[in-house]
Image (cartoon, rainbow, N blue to C red):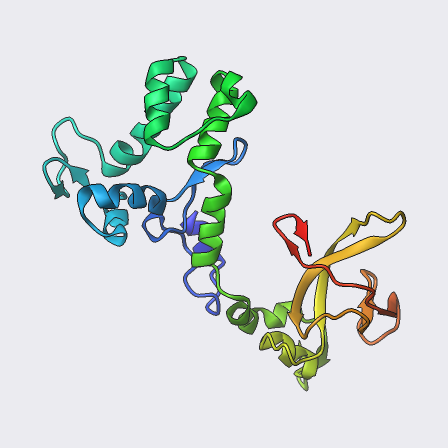
Length: 262
């Protein structure tokens, strides 16, 4: 993967290669909705081993082994720390579910604070495994952790993405095209709330009222307000023309968070 990433390296983006020990790799199953990073297990083991999470993460990847102490040399009959402390517990949990080892599973679930509710208690094997794993290692938490801790903020990202995001261009003396450094471009580049409104609508969501839609999108600059006039440029809009362009009032605004609207 890193070989492919390095092939398309962008100096403005910096090092985009992924490293498990840096928290930029998630392990799991998208189909069954569970995932983890090394940080997930580091938090569990840090207290047990009396070390901080950052140091524990480094021990969970690469040629690290645990005997009576941490060592780089393989321990007789031992496994690498990742296999011993991450994969082996998961394998034991999988086996307990799939082999219907009820007593063993109940002890493991109690230790992991996994609580099944309602109809979940009647599930068996694959369906039970999916329910248990989603409670133990929910993919949403892992994905959110990686987004928050590893992705650049909009203010940082838009500085180097502005050239690709803005369609307004001017022809240079040598015939090449470059972004037009107008107030719209600069507002986008600086993620400026005081600049003119620039919003990209990615989806039209049907509203409760028939025939009406909510324009779901991301604000890149400015502030969107109810009653505000906005120039709407459709998918067939051509820069410098009025094709597929209209000016409308924004009737109301909705803040979408985790599937809820305010």
